[in-house]
Image (cartoon, rainbow, N blue to C red; front, top):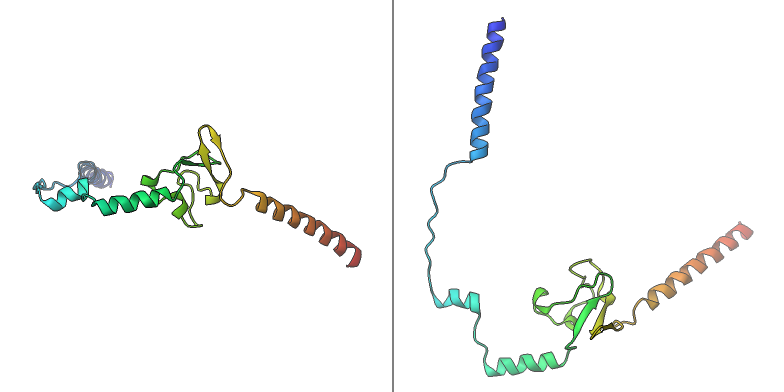
Length: 150
């Protein structure tokens, strides 16, 4: 009986080591040969199309409508970069825009002029603080009313 168990264990060890060697080495595949094709379309993907004078003038007019300085997240200090955010100016971002670094809302961004960070587009956190304190006061008043009347 012991001889049967030893032989089964030996077979199990051999099969398991064979399985591990293929798992670590991976399957053998034929090498993939890629062909380098130089066509105008592949170069356009890298360098882009040349812009016409009208397109350049339109882009400059659009850029003149928006803040030329930097927008900075007040929470984490992230500087908004148009190239990282789909090429959109900060003012074009919708109300659902979040800071890519800390997920702070759009209202937490402020204009940066030199070393000074200004106020945000919607007046900052004043509305949030006013309604928060109003809610606390309403809750306390409701508690007092409930104790007296219930």
